[in-house]
Image: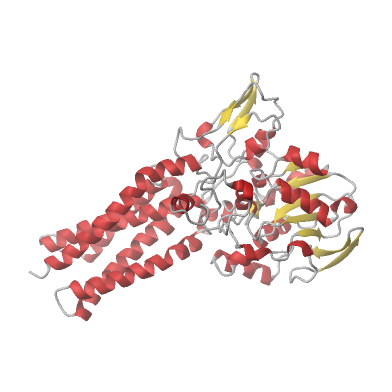
Length: 391
Length: 108
């Protein structure tokens, strides 16, 4: 995958050194960075040795990820320990860098760090890790933690000026929203060069005299990058899904025509299946099919998936539309499923790599009231359909 | 598939050509190729591709570019409407004291 990007990429896609995480967005909690001023400690599992430098003994790392590193990435993608998946900020040696080796800057989200070093097999470089509280480059740049002040501070605190003779560094392009290169130069003396969006392009960028092609500068959002974001999307929706499922099961049991258990099995279980279909449409199918769904607003994309899902489900259930109860039930699900799918799809704007805040606000102004109205209305209609069966 | 385009005619990006020195920094940092440099200087060539990340304005030494930046994220906007979490979507507490300008920006 990529490595550092925002997460856009890969959830990480944006990964330039950061990006990869975006997907996860890796937003870590603040507790991720308790190690702040202790510097890059040697006592971390991925450190393979140490290198003696004018700034002291610095941890050495490899471009080869271990099984433990990979497992950590997988866990983070599934939300396990994601908020606390950090490396100590400070200076690291990749390979055997000398005083002329390039300096690459990244965030202290472990996935960002791993993406970066993995992209540089056989290279010697210094990696300067900023304290972004365990958050990837893109997200941290947006918040300002991957920022000018932290970079300037970290240059001083790490002793970088004693370690290299030159005064150049390569920053992830996706870190640019947080860092003003001209101010970095003024404050630290280091000239900041923006590298490519994706860590995998860094070797070519370095070999080309710190020049990136146009393609290297453009953020994309390919299928693989969208797909890795799905687990976190599902996880985010899991709790409301469970609560709502429980409520529907109980309602179906109480309000149905037959005994509690029979109702629960007949209507309640189907309601949970329908909810799951909405979740699947909004949080799985929408990200996967994103470029091919109609409309530009994400809620519209989710709505279309929701309608198709709802219709398919009604056909599968074989609802008797000859009776009023059946017709009302179909109406209920045609309201509820698209509403939920549209809402979840709208939430995916946060993980995408191309939505603007102004656009999201505009979209939400029309979509959110409709989603809420359709959802509540649908629930009322569904309850009505249960009551209608009493006759 | 070309570059993906979100809603049109909403981006708050503005360029002050008088101030632009033509250094080209914005061309480097923009992740969506919004700018182009031609004979008349810098142009906003693809405004609808702008995601308002703010990289260009932050890195413009001449202060020629302005944009109301923030990461487009529905959860962040909802959180900020509810007054929760400083308007972030999934991320931890807002750390920067100076970051309030990002109304509802965040990462995820």
